[in-house]
Length: 225
Image: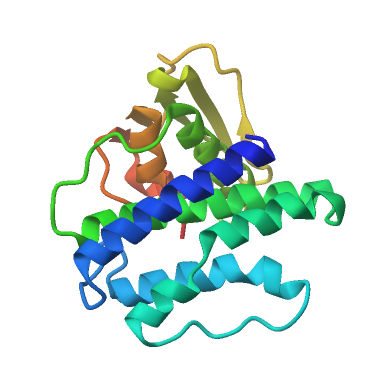
């Protein structure tokens, strides 16, 4: 996912998050984040999206407590403009990291806002390539920091709609390694099969239609904290 694609995803999911949050109302509970209300969810996202731009000039301000003021203060478009303008000033690796992380942050919390509406959430919200990128991000940047196994193990993730198979080899001394990805019928210790969207949701501990088999405790090693 390049910068322009990431920015498009930030816009898409921030707009959808706002719409779902407004419909749910600020005091609605967020079932996928049990300690949060919708107000707290929006405040969290708004603050996260304000940081990169503010960090270039001054300290980050605190999001307003008033709901209407918070919605006015939260400005995803300004955040996207900051990312695009930063191509001339930020190191490319830093910029790509911020844009990618922010896109998936907006997407997952958009999902939280959808659940807070109290209505069925469509099983397909995310483009397969985008959802697969979210799986890649989690497996490469987040899961390795918390994965600890006592014995070698193997986990398979298969998203047919994205044409992706992740054959994950876990070892006590090597963390997570990606094995050959050409055989979705491997004999493994655990597996997650479904759309890329479903696997993405499952690994971020959100309600998912993915088919999960095998060692659940082992699979928890891959999931977001």
